[in-house]
Length: 367
Image 1 (cartoon, one colour):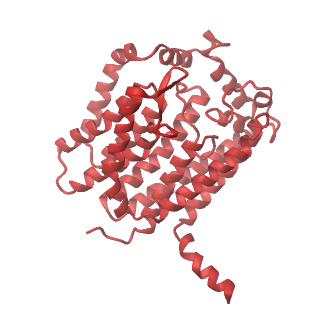
Image 2 (tube, rainbow, N blue to C red):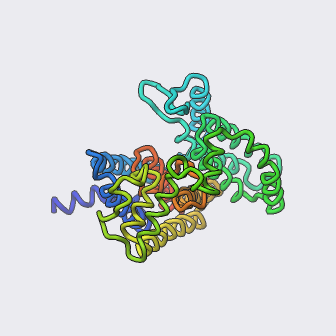
């Protein structure tokens, strides 16, 4: 009886989890942990740190899953405002590491741009919710300005990878809010037309990344080294891979950043095409489940937020796999739930928790 009473007591705290979503994330995390162990075997404490990050991300996910979407709406404007203020603080007196000004010391060192990955869709979803039923072209202009301000500050640091993710998160909300296909086509044409100007605004190392993408063999021991070695690792995995812990490219240290941005190359070498196909199916299931949650959400705010968070997962995976495979420039985007890294895992855990919260409260109608 005592055991039953205890189980009944804790059951409500575990009912917050969406079983399907939790299982998919668990499987990807398991694959990621195994790969981090293999890739980081020469880095003492790397797996322990990764497991600690996973635990922190789980706690954040659990807390977020218990917070109702109505309460999230109240935090949208304050979180966005604080995030932009911190980005301005970074621009004014942020810490510089490896030529980039991305960090701020506020008693502890933080990277404010990471906040915007969730704050941006949260803010825009709140903005469109307030104008539900009367959204016009002026609202889309205001939303674009709300998006461009933090994206510009992040790109200036410079941090192109995070700027792309934040821009994508905001764009998805704007698109789901009803952006016209004609406007989207016009924006696409304008973007393509502005590329020559944008090229002149890029930093030297960013232009070098694009040129390296076109032909990495022009600097095989320098800027092209990352792409060349990662594509060799992916190709050498073959159909079934070389076997767990048997990847020569990783263990002979040919793959740089092999526990973080280039972990997909390590995974591909050891598990081959079969492993890649399995991982892709898991990501497709993750995205499909997220979009289903968005489709069944009861309010405009929760639909926009769930849809944007789900497609952020897609953007993470697409950009990372694309850059590791040599079809996109190297921009420093981790593979979701696979790569080592505390900040990214916590952000992804927060996003997953919000999805679970939206699913849990789907029967509630906001008044």
